[in-house]
Length: 263
Figure (tube, rainbow, N blue to C red):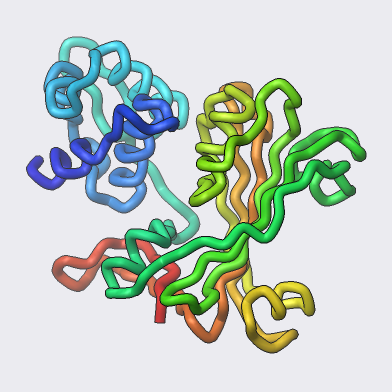
């Protein structure tokens, strides 16, 4: 319970990410990593609301989302319980770059490569389920540690002329925050895809490495409540700086699942 309270207290009411969404993701992560086990009950709505300093309605909305995902099951008069579930894949965790680099004694920074309004090509149109040539906001940036380029990121959302992106939102833009601020739509679910890739000529220049060297490619697609794609991004992690680490839960203190970790 103490561990759960610690996670719940991380919720920021000043963030552009809706509070209910933050709460839902915290609970979902704990379920998928096995920290909340099948059959285990959640603290009461009142208890969660008290810990987080939020309303019961907000807590109820977060729980309802996880009920829709079949991760939680309410039982009248008894409470809300984690459902029995089976995952045919390993759950991977992607650490916040800035926090992780500081934890490792590095100085993180981001460099904006460009921000453009472009016409969606075939790939972007397919990912966002929009017609080809739809105006799309494209953001490209480099994440560095002690000035050493580590990750190259591209993010795409449908462009809305009435909602310009301001400069402060581009310093460390997460895809959910960009979508929430620009589209005024709430990302409800997120899908990440991990693959191995080869760095191309342009990416090699930006990452100051050799073309055709191996790398990790992580794609993220955000969906709204109607399961419509509202944001797509991809991150290229240098293969000579990152490794894939998977934990089986057999070692004390280790989480079941895996991470992309800085070497």
